[in-house]
Length: 461
Ligand code: ATP
Ligand code: MG
Image (cartoon, rainbow, N blue to C red; front, side):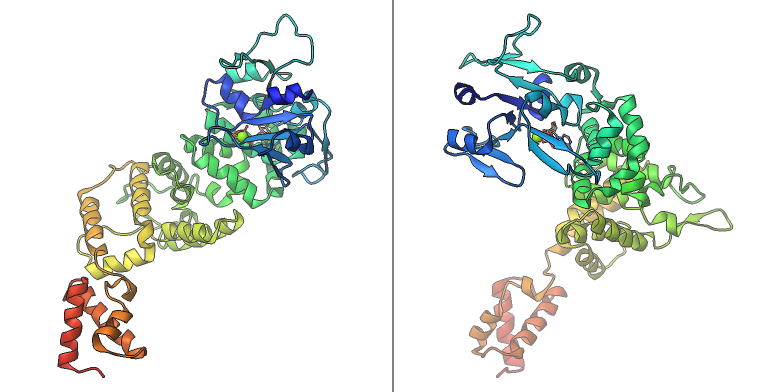
């Protein structure tokens, strides 16, 4: 900041960093705004680099564990005909103009060196840096500091107008309120309620990024309830909205909550911070509204809800532009969440289940089950579940495919002096089925020995 200042430029810390500073939190993202253009900034710092897409100049931090400092030239934005982005962005001329385009009062504050103007008597330095004795002053034209103290998310200017410019700001309001445990101020909340439909103009990727941040915050269940209250949930996850009020309390059933409430309760309990596991937990029963049936004896059933659920999960994954791997994991977790922990299952049935869920997803599947149980008012686990977990570990010691054998086609060729050909695969398959049936262990020595005896009993040439 002193480098900018010495060269006669204005420079301010802005955004999340100011918020975190005033809340006495550790600052992770250092964002700045200045009247210097990117070209000028580049000439001031030899290791600076320009990110054209965001119009931001990055300067690597001297502490290697910190993220780079990100500096953006003052901006003003005009015309938002598509409710998504400004038609035109141009360089602004003052800090005030730059703060005006920001979304919420707590995000529209700046910390600056303030060398450029006479100080008012009311202004006291917000910070004095130990080493350099630099003094920083808070610039707060929208009373963000007061809102921060009151724990309010309040739009800068007219809320409805601001959401009309960029509808994603409505999700940001919910996301930031959830992350910080703040309340959305009343007129801002009303504006979200009456403009919620505009969210559908926003791309799936941008909605997903905010949704994942909500899901991964310490109280995702609060965030989901807020999404519901604002009317945004109905727009972004209509299938989830439909689960609220779907009754499942009935004779012979353990459920005490309606489907939607159970899903929110389950999300509250999930510990891993993988957004896909959290999303899967949130939507695991999403197929229930479509499969609801009340029998003559008043028993409620949801046959095959996990099959319908997996189809819906697939559609949600496409809408939120999940990657192929994310989509695969999400649908598998929803599809198989009803897995049985019955001790009478055979080893091979268990191995089939593992293949369907995917060995890499087993831990997450068990975590979903744990959250599902607590979320429906049951105990965290049962002796059956604990026994089942032990068996899962046991049966996974056995190979799943020929490729998991501790011997390769090359070994077979060398041992038996064979040339490459279909014969090699046949031999490997035979060895594999012996290992799978526990006739021989999956160990190189034992497999080589078996090869030799195979050769003796029915010579291979
Ligand atoms: P964090 O990085 O902790 O999520 P942040 O406030 O830094 O919080 P960013 O998404 O990094 O959030 O955005 C930086 C700043 O840019 C915000 O503080 C806000 O002033 C402004 N901003 C970001 N997105 C928008 C938007 N859609 N509309 C208006 N201003 C925005
Ligand atoms: Mg940030």
